[in-house]
Amino acid sequence: MDRSHPAVHPVAVPPLFHLPPAHLRMKDLPGSPGTLGGLALRVGQFGFAIIAFGVMVAMTDFSTVTAFCYLVAAMVLQCLWSISLAIIDLYALLTRRSLRNSLLVGVFVVGDGVTSTLTLAAACATAGITVFIDNDLGDCGPGHCAKFEAAAAMAFLSWILIQLSFLFSFYLLATR
Amino acid sequence: MDRSHPAVHPVAVPPLFHLPPAHLRMKDLPGSPGTLGGLALRVGQFGFAIIAFGVMVAMTDFSTVTAFCYLVAAMVLQCLWSISLAIIDLYALLTRRSLRNSLLVGVFVVGDGVTSTLTLAAACATAGITVFIDNDLGDCGPGHCAKFEAAAAMAFLSWILIQLSFLFSFYLLATR
Image (spheres, one colour):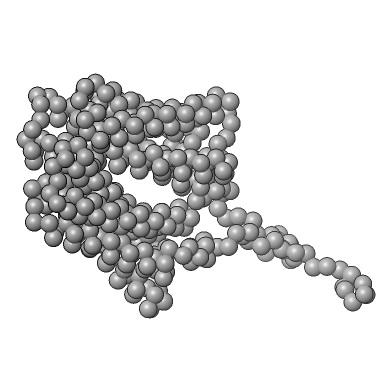
């Protein structure tokens, strides 16, 4: 048995990396920019944000409360950001291009972080004021508070999806 | 000059990693758990949260508004979380132990994420209601709204620090 093996073994050169290269790991993330999951997240964010915007704007007296105006502004920003990123994702998917550039992912992280914070802030302010008018003051017109609550809930759902996008982009940036 | 060098060069075995090993990169992060920067962040979070709690509780009528009660509850949670993590950081620093365990960092990420979201939500709800009472209703007692605003501002400062802790912990988890 031993004779079949050569007496001198060649020096084994250890592999350069035990882990797969960074670009392979990046590609595997299902919700990262430039993937179908990433596109779905953007479409979801846009959808919930535009519903929140529509519900709030449909109330004629929303402009009397500063925080409700802020929610409308935040939802407009969220819609613009999400639709822009959805278009970029769609372009990357159709042309099979990669969005794994560090600078680009950095821009996504900062943008997602800022819009996520603004959206959560607007949703919380709206929810807080609605609870204040409804429960604490008991001064809500018929069906008014239900609509403000619906707008806040849609903004929250949009925030959950943008927070997921932020975490995926940040993970990409950290493991690049 | 050339004669001093041997004619046959040994085969250079390439290094296993071009990047420093993961545990070294983890150690280099200044605000990560178990470092002096991490401890400073925890002490800052605790400090701002306890000031926000104190300012809010000092107002006798804070309990009439649901969102102000929520801010008090969120600040208590924030204080408990931050002081616990500060004690763990101090213990790690004094005994020179490492907090680079994946499970432990995972717990830090989840805890920081939850408390960060609750703190921002409470700060935004408080700020929104204060602006609503002060600007929209014009119904603020003397010095009342300034104190509510101060509590909201302290909660925001606490949120900024816990968000930094969250990002450091998440970065550690991503690059482990």
